[in-house]
Every structure is written in C-alpha cells, then in structure tokens.
Length: 349
Image 1 (tube, helix red, strand yellow):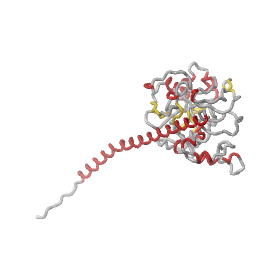
Image 2: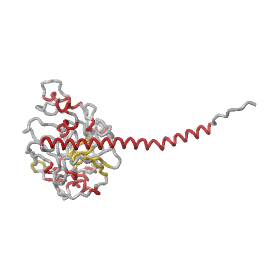
Image 3: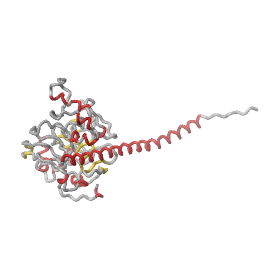
Image 4: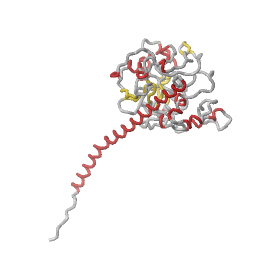
C-alpha cells in the first residue's frame, strides 16, 4: 500500500492562525512601548541640548536669552527665544541667514522683496529637528515650521503685579497697563539672578502642538487645543487670594475652542505660537487664552506631552527630569520661579 501524506485540517489551521494572532497581540504593545521609549529618549536629549545651549549663550553674552521685545524702542528684535540659541545647537547657518536689521516676519503675504515682511520669511519654513518632540506629530499649520518646546516665562504676570518672576525676560520697557498695573519689564536675567538655584529652576518644557483645525468649530477636545477666556477674566482672577490656582481652575472649566495652531511658528515670540509657556497651568491640563495668541505674555499656555503620565522638563543646570502629571501644584509653581525662595525636595518632583 502507498503511504498517505495527511495534510492540515481546517481546525488545525485555524488553531495555528489563532496562536499567531495571540503572539502578535502580545508583542505589539511591547514594540509600541519600545518605540515610545526611543522617542522619549530623543525628547530628553533635545531638551538637554536646549538647556546647554542657554548656558553657552549665557557664557558668551552674560545673560539668559531674551524671549522677545516688550516695545519697539530696542529696534527690530521681534524674535523668539529659539532664534537666539541657534548658533549653540549647531545651526549657525540658519542664524547667519537672518537679517537682524529686520524683525521676524509673520506671514507670506508679500512677494515684494523691498517689503520688510519679505526679508526674513525663509525662517517660517526652516524646520529645526531639535525643536520638536518625536512623540508629537501634530501639524499646527502646514505652511509654517513648528516647535513643540517652549521656554519658561514663569507664572502668569498678572498675579505678580505684572512682573516676570521666571528665568526669562523681554527686551525694552513697557508702558502697557494691564488690570490697572503697568508691566514691569526692561531688565535682563543672568544666572546670578537665579537664587532658587539652577537645579531647581525649569528653563524648557514641551507642549503638544495644535492640529490646525479650520474652522475651529471642527476641532476636537484635547491637549492640542487652546480654550477661550476673556480679558476681564485675567483681572478678576488675578485679584483672588490664590490667583494662580484660580486661573488654572477657570481654564480647566472652559469648553470654548479658540485656537488649534499652538506652536506653529518657532521663530516668533508670541506665547502659544513660537514663544514660551506659563507655570500657572499644571502639566497636561488645558491651555487658555485671554483673547489672542498674538500676545507675547498674557496667556495661559501650559506644558503638555503625549508621553504617558507626564512631561519632560529641562532645568538651568542642564538636567532633564520627567515630571508626573500628579505633581503637587505648589511644587510646580516653585520650580517655575527664579527667586521665590521656595524649598523643593528632590522626591517631590
């Protein structure tokens, strides 16, 4: 008799397929976790390089870079914090192409080469990898080059008699009155000013970029969105016994979509566009605006990330730490000021 070669039955084939499916299901989360770990490591490295760039800038110029200008009495210096450190993150070519006799352009609205708006518009289209977290693939506006890192502007100035108490500053003086108080600007900050200690003062963190919903009504709820408050809210909340906490609570309760283009132009200084963030908003909470994201300072743009459980921040000493979303609010405020005198223990971060 001839030997018969028995093949697989349908049941056996289905069992094999089921086993393979289970193995894939078990391996996929591990692969995704490994990829996220690699992205998070790259994000940490980016933030470390940015912190070291601030130190190198300080060693050269004797001060921390300015976040922009308060008025026009300092010439055409309408540039973001990120512009100033380009030579220190191996981007001297980009920095050297900037005509510092003109400010950073805001749009591509002109094609006239004699128009000041035309001069530096190339900056709007140069993407700097070091300014973007690989875990955040959002595109705030496909026309422009974006950033997902922002410098620390300290807590909201309205709560501190219109004074910046963080590690950054704006060039020039201001005659602008907000909530009846004139802005107290026009000074520089150096490392000697950081009496809280460079290891206790945050200089950079990450923020989730917008998704560019247009019209805004088509947007979705989430960390990428900026929500709306009113100008009157800024003043009324600043008068509360605990104004920072009152502001973050008010922002958290807002359901008004106002902007979905956070971080869209890294070369410009307005907060929420290419500028900084405020420590009034706790990590991974809603960001809000009191009117327009064209403002350089008076907004409630907070830190956020797509890393599970918290955000990466870099300190002025060059260290990078992962801050849990559950960090105590007083501790979060404390590491946002330069000379508040708060005592912050390492185990509280």
